[in-house]
Length: 353
Image 1 (tube, one colour):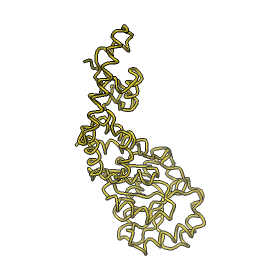
Image 2 (cartoon, one colour):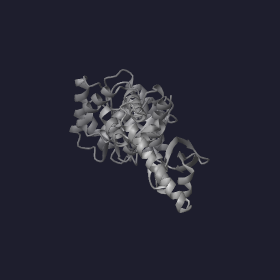
Image 3 (cartoon, helix red, strand yellow):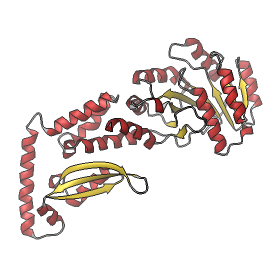
Image 4 (cartoon, helix red, strand yellow):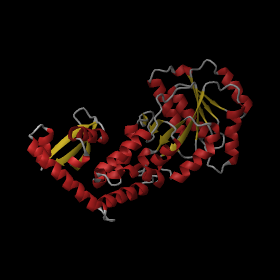
């Protein structure tokens, strides 16, 4: 038997290279699959196949007698696989069930998992746990949605439950915008959170240190007056009152400012979520604010959890884009533009743990 490796950007592409060379999955067996970074720090995938020497020679252009022998061997392999398929506890079924159970424990929806794994039932891919996982991770990556422009509106409203770090996130995005070239004199922060003790002082402290205009609003009339005053500003960031799905008063307060204002113009609603939240809580939060027509998600507290499966499942379900990923309290250091790689690598770390 001979071993041969195929390297590509994704597991499926590497697998297709082997199929392209040897014509059929019946002609070889996948014995290893791995993902690693090359010398340029790019994530690449490698599969290693095991192939009989006669088949290798056949596809390398060897003589007809050897080709006949290889056809006999292929027939034997097919018969062997048919016998394996008759066993209810075949290795393929065990691998499929193992991967299914692991992904469900990580928080992914069982219906999504079964839909993803079903095409691999009875194939050689299902014999190799690492290869099968590589295909699943690739599908997750393809399904995640990332905002092409994290800040693409003049007015940006930030909503979300209490304790997810909205205020700190606004400060980080303000600092990030200044670093990206937005003139601080053209930026304003508005605080609508008159419920939480200290909210005015905290956001005001950040605004003062960043050198941007800051307003704390108590009424809709004041809000409209301030928005008219800020007509020449290029970037306005609005902090709303944090609320759970059961804080009706705070919810109505957010509705009042958003739905009744006539001066918002080009605006974007950003729902701030904690990566540490449970799936059911993420769904409740999203449904609570969905009437505002959420445009993007901002994920915070990535550093405070080792289980991002719930977040991955939620993002796959909602299909709304993620704009920023936040971790820690440092302004603006602990803020990154969201990428599929950043989200997926956190999940891969859990899978490999």
